[in-house]
Image (cartoon, rainbow, N blue to C red; front, side, top):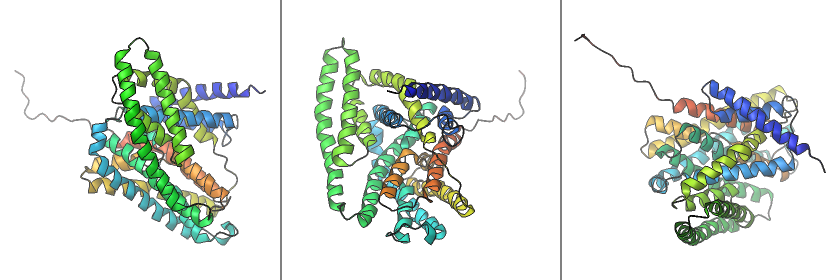
Length: 402
């Protein structure tokens, strides 16, 4: 049995904290430092840390706990208000990147990058599907750090990201069904609807039981946290395993169900401690650890840059236009669009599934990884800029001393 994982965790915790404090010193979110830690100490630079199965699983726990806390801190009434807006933002936030990604891929893709048995057009569409992905976990952490999560804009981003996940699953199913005839689109749609029906029923039952228990017995506060975490993990597992919905969606809904109970703040505080101490640093660092860039041709480098620009612009424009249609101010539209830029682990998972099915060649995988990592690192920085408050400047005319 190897104990090297202990050294890996120690290096991740130390490096993410040191670089997090360094980025904070320069008025950037600490999450940027944590992301850079994985990039610097991983295969892309010093090659001291590597992605292992254990770190992958711990990373998954990290993003699950992060989304659970986001659900706990969500104002349900405010989210109801932004429900229609979230749907419109999500639809345009999927369509614009899909078209934009397809256009970039169609321009740069060459026959030498083709996968045998798969048409180039299908590959180009799949690259567009990858660009539709949104990883809201990075945005959630950044907004929490800035105190902007429980705001109309924060709730719009969360709602749109959840719907975005569902639309992304549908888009991925459609494209993979063209490459794999065993995938049935109708069954996938039924499963998605089934999950939300299941979540609604279980949510009502669990909420009533949990609320009654916590109000009656105040001497078992530690048990509240254990039961809440177990419920979170069960919802995440059931969502992914039985319904094909992202596990983070199940975790977020679990947090949302508990958010109206009197113990919400206590449970959230306990989770913050666990997340800050271990899970979140591993999750953020793991994104950087996934980067293994081999030598690329000039054409692939140019493709990487074009894909990155399209990835950023398409989300800001698509989600921003959707927000504008719903009556948000120009500044709020920019904030919502920026909050949806990060692709994170979601895009990597989509790309990996496509690679297995022969929808994308090995040469084109590196540009996608670059796009994912850069959008993930740049999102917290952009959010800091778009949420910056203008300092009021007082102009005093003809001031006199009494």
